[in-house]
Image (tube, rainbow, N blue to C red; front, top):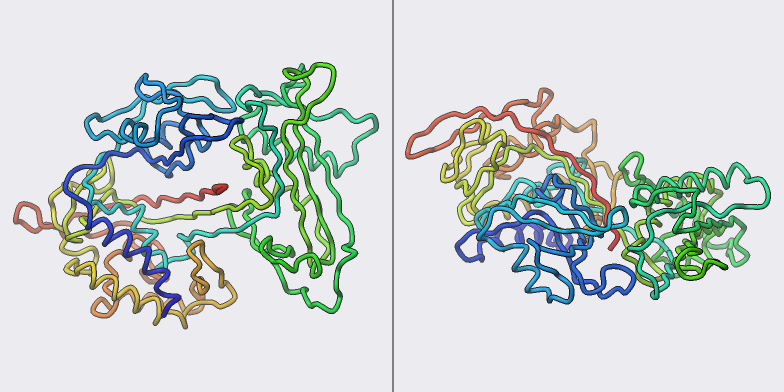
Amino acid sequence: MKKISLVLFLISTIILGASAQSKGRLCDFGITFEISNNSSWGYGEPVVLSVEPFSPAAKAGVKVDDIIMEVNGAATYLRNYPTIASWLFDATSSDIKLTIRNVDTYFKEYEIQRDCKSVNALSEFHLADAYAFYSLEDTNDRAFSLPVKVDPNTNVDFADYRTFDFLKEDSSVPDVDYYINSQIEKALIERGLVRSTQDPDIIVQTYYTFQPNLKYNASVNSKNSYSWRYDSETQEMVKLPILSADDVNAESKGQYILELGIRFFDKKYINKDKMTQIWDCRSREFLTEDYDIQEYARIHASLLMMQYPYSTAKTTAKYLVSKKGFNYTGLNFDSKDIASITDVDAGSPAALAGIRPGDRIVKIGKIKFDYSSDDLEKAYRRFIVESMPLRNPKTRFIDANGFPDCMYWSINRYPEVAELFKKEAIYAPCFSYLYAFNKYVSGPNPPKVLDIEVKSQGQKKLVKVTPQVQQSVVIKAL
């Protein structure tokens, strides 16, 4: 039951935490930030840490690591966090203008519409997280670490560097080197840098080794050991024959050692007569079996480059992968009274169907909305516990909150899972509609239209809403 409490902490934070807020409106556009203390990137200015998918900021093009130079024309340099926050989240205006600097631009303005809602509003985006155990296949947070050593030159400002090229070798480049460089090039371009053979700002050198581990202890059985990493091409977590970065005994358990590194040199601004190293990032892995260095580079090049440009010296890098897929209608529910609609997103399926703020949800499908927050939490607790036998143990993983028994549904038991969602009196699955596009939630013929019974101005009416399935995968270097 202690394991279950880790999951329930999330739903309690979302539902009960919102209830503790005061009355009023909260305006947001989907970013988090911190004031940089990093001499190499945005010192004394706000740096964007995260951008929520589908948010106004995401739609405008704001990206992680953007440096916010101005808010509505006011300079942010050396302003404190409360001051910047008051400018960004001011509830008195509907839009905001940000002036941003990043790797690919010195100066760019973004006009962003604020998303203003009741402080008690629960959006479907966040409810999808709270009820992720209805469909871990669609929504989950995963974390992993890399044994990465990062060494930035703190005397340079990475904002000055825009273009790159690879260090020219005297001899012909082996195929494996060519492939690894192609993966590094792809990752650099994704970060906003531009390849240029004419006087580039950065000279890139890649290096790698793959060799037997002389400290390997053959008496230690590590054949079945593995770790999870994120594959950006498939947008999925994949299991690799690599010992965890958190394994203190990896040096004696790994049969092979693999290293992959990227160095940046300046030969343009600091000293034109010699190359000066400005950044180095190197992974050192212990493998439980032979593994293709090219495949390692394909998966890990982008992960290594996520350490640039907002870079600090470190020996371990942590990453968070947030996957989400849910039925979006645009409804926002009152955390104090779950049947009450506080806000309806403009232009959303629910808005187009005629649902308005202040309306009350009587039913979605056949599920009534007459439960308290406490009722919902207790029912969800019971659902998680009693549904465990219907999950596939071979898919078990630990989520980012530390819950160790996250598993997908067993495919051959989908009909039994769907029956659980019909047991309203036991499980109160009000928000199962978020995942109703799955057969294990709705049965063999998932509905494309939601029947929502609404009470509006004292009158009940049936509204048909065609939801949009919103899907996103976001990886963040912590």
